[in-house]
Length: 270
Ligand code: BTN
Image (cartoon, rainbow, N blue to C red; front, side, top):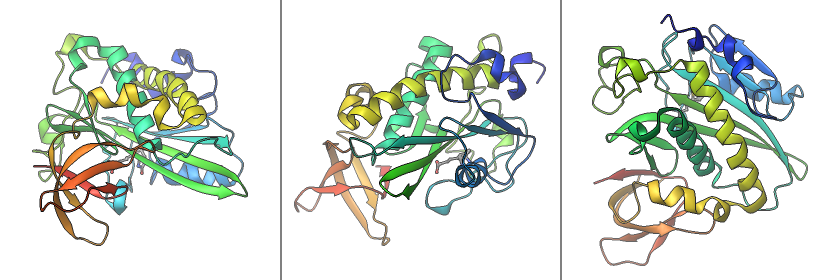
């Protein structure tokens, strides 16, 4: 990839944020940017500190799943956040990050990405396939919370560069955009961090209600028939009715039972 704005070393020149990414550590290769950010958090990393990598050898997704991370193709990034003692709950953090990521990508690519959808709780889907994923991890220090927000965005990968098991389910920006409209990873990441910064500020002040209007119109799940895989492995067939004030998914089972809240389960569209 010869585009100068593809090199993440170019990020400082492109940043428009006040906090996010102003302290930045880039690695050619690392196990997981989330692991490194958690380690750095423990060693006193400042709010907004950013870890990026060109490749991950142990990239992690939700529920301990691996995150495929070949060299130089995608964005692998983790941000340290120190919001203090949040005035609202932060259970919907992944939803807020999804809003920031989506708006950052739309800011760069405009109408071409207007169909970019948010699949509750932590995926961004393009044409029904996964373009990006989010992994939020938290720790408490007394009454204050410390967070690492990690995200991976598939940027340059061709169909063949996805593992065979992912080919039918994953996509990249390159697979959707004509060559002339493509952008480098540093340009994309700078726009994402810009949108993320404003979105997180509103979220930490007002919780999910403060970003609900920017989430719901793009949420792929509401009103749809879903299959919920509970943490204990149980599967429930239901209809997604909406989102609670704290971002939990409200679902009504097909068997006529009472509506229930989904907080950390896997959700599939049927
Ligand atoms: C998911 O969809 O399950 C979440 C995927 C999150 C992947 C990113 S890539 C950068 C950061 N480092 C990791 O090890 N994971 C996240």
